Length: 61
Image (cartoon, rainbow, N blue to C red):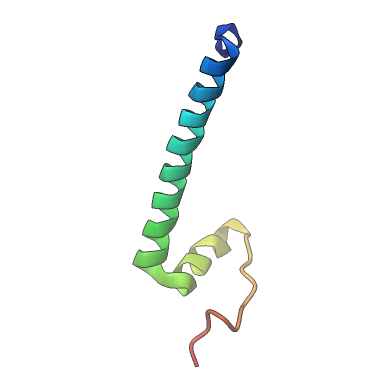
């Protein structure tokens, strides 16, 4: 369906889709970060089997 569009229109349509998805993903990540912080976000990924390597940059003294 998208291949039926002329090349410039297809490029613009894909650009718009990528921008919209990027905004959605950034908003979702920001919500997790500002609501739970780094520790809470890392803890929410742990049950899914996704480990977060500790970083001295984010740790509190």
